[in-house]
Image (cartoon, rainbow, N blue to C red; front, top):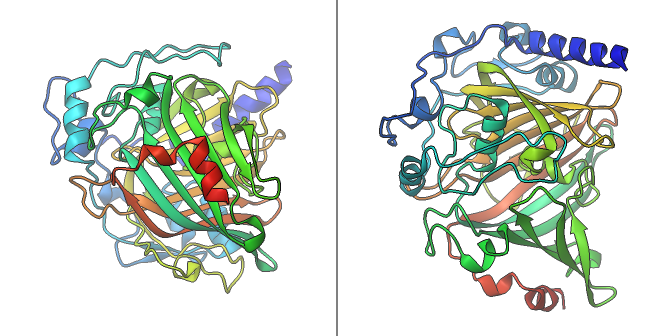
Length: 432
C-alpha cells in the first residue's frame, strides 16, 4: 500500500512538472472582496489576467507536430500527444476576455460570501455545500474544491435546448455510427435571467438543482427513446425515467451512476461538459494557475454538417477544426473517493474567467493516460444576456484509438422552457 501511494505521488509530481505548473502565471490577479465586479473588470476580479507576452506563438500562427516543442508547458501533455501522434493542429487567434450576463454579474456581487463549503471526506454521499446562491460562489478561488464549485456553478443560462449529432469514430475506419438527439434542461436554482428568480419552487423544493429531458430523433430504430432526469442538491446517483418505444413503457431508471458510459459512447456520464458529477465525489487539488492555449472562442458554426466542425475525412477522423487562444486557467487534479471508479486520477484545465472546463485527462488504474475530454463551447450570441452554446465536444480514448464527438445543429438558451414538457406524461407522449 505504501509503495502504491508513493508511486501515485511520483506520478502526480511528474504530471505537474510536464504541465509546467512550477512556473505559475498570476499576472494581474485582483482580489474581488470589497470591490464591485463589473463586465469590464470581471476576468481579473474573479480570476486573473493571462500572461499574453509569455506565449511563444502569436495570433495567425498554427501549432502542429513540426513546432509543438515551442509551446511545451502551454498545452497539457495529452494535447501534445494529439498534435504529434494524431495530427491535431491549433490555429491561434487573439485572446478575448470573457464576461457573463449582466444578471449573473449582479448576482455574484449580491451573494459573495454566502456559499459555505466543507470537505466531507469519506462521507461523499453527504452534501458539503450549504445552499445554491445565484452567481459565482468563489471569486478568486483559493482551493481545488472552490474551483470545482465555481465550475459547477458557472454561468450557463437558466435553461437551454440543443439539437446535436453524436458520432462514434474509429481512428482507422472513420465514422462508424451517427445519432441525432434533442436535449433540453431547466435550472431550478441559480437563476439570474428569467422569472421566477432565483428559484423555481416546484423544482428547488424537491432538492433538485434542475431537470432535463433527452429524446432520440435518428436513426429510425432508436426514434422515440427518451429520458427524464433531475440533478440533485445532494451527491447521489440520479433517479429518473426512460421511455422505451419497443416496450411502449416508461421505466424508472438510475442515471449517471459514477463510472457508467453515457449512451454507450466514450464519455462517462461525468465526462459531459468536462465533469458532470458531484464536487463531493472527488479529492480536489489546485495545482496552480497558468496561461495555456485553450479553445475559448472556437469559431464553431451550427448546422447539419459535422464536417464543418471535425476533419472526418482524414486520420484520425476526430480532429476538431477550431480556434485556440491564450487563456488564464486553473490546473486541477482530482482523485475519486469511490474505490471502484474507472479513472484513478484526472487532470483538469478550468478557465479562470468563464470557469468552463475545456480539457481533461483521465488515467486508468495503472496510472496510464486513457482518455482526453475536450470541450469548446460556441461563443455567446449576446454576452449581456446569453451564455455560450454547445459547440464541439469530444471524448478520445487513446488506448482504443476511438472517439465520440458531438456536433450541435442548433441551440438556444434563456428561452423560457415550458415546465410541462419535463413530466413523465410528456416523456411518454414524445415517444409515441
